Amino acid sequence: MSLQITLLGYALLGLIRQNDCSGYDLRKTFAETPMGTLGDSPGAIYPALRRLEERGLIRSRPVKGSVRQRRELAITNAGVKCLTAWLTAKVQVTDVMSGMKDLMLRFAFLDAALGEAATLRFLRSMEAALKEYVPELRSYFQSNAAHMTSSARLALESGILSYEAQSRWVKRAIEVYEGKVEGR
Amino acid sequence: MSLQITLLGYALLGLIRQNDCSGYDLRKTFAETPMGTLGDSPGAIYPALRRLEERGLIRSRPVKGSVRQRRELAITNAGVKCLTAWLTAKVQVTDVMSGMKDLMLRFAFLDAALGEAATLRFLRSMEAALKEYVPELRSYFQSNAAHMTSSARLALESGILSYEAQSRWVKRAIEVYEGKVEGR
DNA sequence: GATCACATGTAAGAAGTTACATGATTCT
DNA sequence: AGAATCATGTAACTTCTTACATGTGATC
Image (cartoon, rainbow over all chains, first blue to last red; front, top):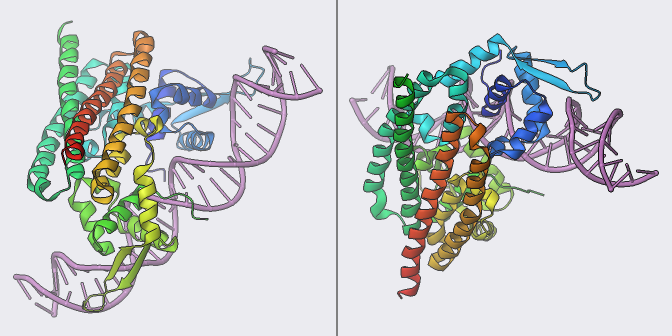
């Protein structure tokens, strides 16, 4: 039973952990922030919430005081545990390969949920994965650039540049958090 | 009827246009190139190919000479038309918002399929979309950075940096193609 | 009185994932 | 002979998209 939780599911879980809120509030959050690309349609959010509740990761109850029909959502202990497992999982090369979106969502929730030391561990793990992947990409580029069209070559270069930009960002972020963790 | 074609569908269409090939060849391509993230499972590819054929965008026929049971795929006129429409569509801000993956796939196919002038048009369209989106992101950052956690702030910065890296790349790519188009 | 914002959902259908199924051919 | 590779597919399941459905309270 249960098995995997989608990115949308984790996003909902992470937001609910930060503040108890309603499904409608969550939709608004998606609509108004750069997280919007995760899907802001009720047809995705409400079923995802129901699944989280079925799995015991959140609890919902109608709000008494309110005149409107509003259900307030709260994370459970099991939910916190599940979110933590996701947040602390080692960053694999395949995670980096499939794009930064998932990783950045994890990172955005990290320090509020688990503190600075955990955030730093995440960043170092991400740095290691990038250090493994970027040379792979570069070596693919060097072997294949010759027989690719200009645009395909440039497209690949764009990917490499973007991972290099991520690498620089990660380095800077580590410095920021090293300062925080050490400087107490 | 028919309606939309997924990114995987366009990827298949684009690859078949470049070289007639089999489903197995396509799987190998996905497995061996950085395009792999589009999905290399037979359960995705074969149904996607069937849909393309049902819509008249590709044709398949068993290869006679070959001993193995192998179907060779070829693009039809309708397929070329459909691919061209996708490749030449104006880049919207929403396209940029949902990530560079789709756009870079389009770009990778562009010059072999439609030549340098079309590639340049695409790049300029993409540049315009980025010029609209990056300031939006920056302004969101400025309004909200104050009440965000450090990690959420850094995550957003990472997104901004990555779009800025894209902007620089696009500028350089435009220069490359301007040289090509003018320098004849 | 109508329309907008709040608030929650369902229904139909498309597409992807994982795992399985099948069979031929080449390599060891 | 057995294993790996070539080659094509199906089945069950999960999830997302788009569009619709429903109803309240506030605003014009």
